[in-house]
Length: 364
Image (cartoon, rainbow, N blue to C red; front, side):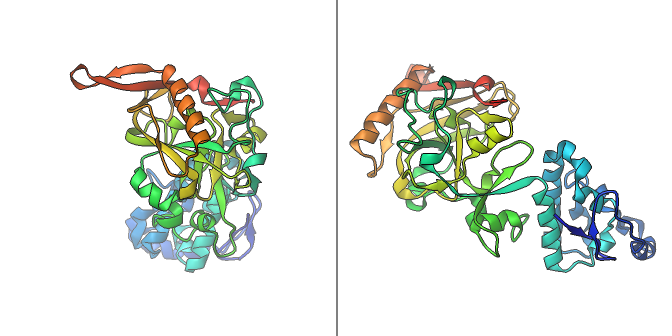
C-alpha cells in the first residue's frame, strides 16, 4: 500500500515521512472563516465527525461520502493494526486543503487505500468439491446424514434472504454492489472487485479484523440448514425465506470457512461465498419469520427464527433425490424447535433458537 504526500509526492511511511510542504496549505487555511478551516484528516472518523459536513472545502460531496464510509469501517475494523497504518500516518499530516488539490482519480486511489487496510480481496478460485466440509462431529453439514460431506460431495447449501422467491427465481442471486452500488462505494475497489472491472479481478471482500465476508460484495451460503438462519444478520427481523441450492461440484467460489481457519477460528455452519447463484441452482424455498437476537444487535447470546410452514416448495430443478434429502432435513430441523400457536389457537410454525455456542468459535 502506498499513500503519496500531495506536496512532495513521496510515499508516506509511518513515523518516517518528513515534509515541510504542508505549510503551504496552512497559510491559506488560516485566512478562511473558522467553520471552513481545514483540519488534518485525522480529525474525521466518518461517523461522529464526518467529512460530508465540510462540503464548502471544495471536494465533490460524492467523494466526501466515499471517504466517510471507508473511514467509518476503517475505525471499526483496524483495531491494534492502526499502529502500522499508512492511512493513519497520512491522515495525521494532510489537511482538507491538501486533499482538495487531488484530481478525481487520486481521490478514488486514496479511498481504495483505506479499504485495502481492512479488507482482503479474495479470488473465486476454489471449487465446491475442494472446499472445507465434514471434518469432525461438531461441524456436520447434515442433520440426517452426519457421516457424509453433503456440501462438498453433493453440492447442497442454504441461504436465508429477505428477497422474494418470485423475484429470485427470475434473476438468481447477485451481490448488491454488482447491480446497485450505493454512491458511497461506487467506482471504488469495493464496487470494482464485485463486478470485475478496471484491472481488478472479480473477488470477494473479506474483513481482516472480524474475518467475515463484506456482505454486499458476494453471495454467501451455509453448508448447514440450521445455521443459515443467521443470514443476513442475527438481529434482522420480519418475513424472510430459506433457499436450498444444489451446486455443481466444479462451481468456483471463495471458501470463507477455510480462510477463517487459517486465522484462528470459524463460523460453525460453514460459510462459502460466490460471485452469483443462478436460477437453475435454486431447488427449494420455504417461508421463515426472523425473530431477531436476544439483545437486538449482532452481539447476541441467542437468535431465533420461525419456520412458518416447515415444508419445502420445490422448483422444477429439484430431483426426486433432492426432495427426499431436503424433506428429511427440514423434518429433523423441526424436531429441534418448539411449536408456536397461531391466531385463535390455530397451529402455527416451529421456532428454532440458535445459541452463541453454535456460532463463531476461535481456535478451531
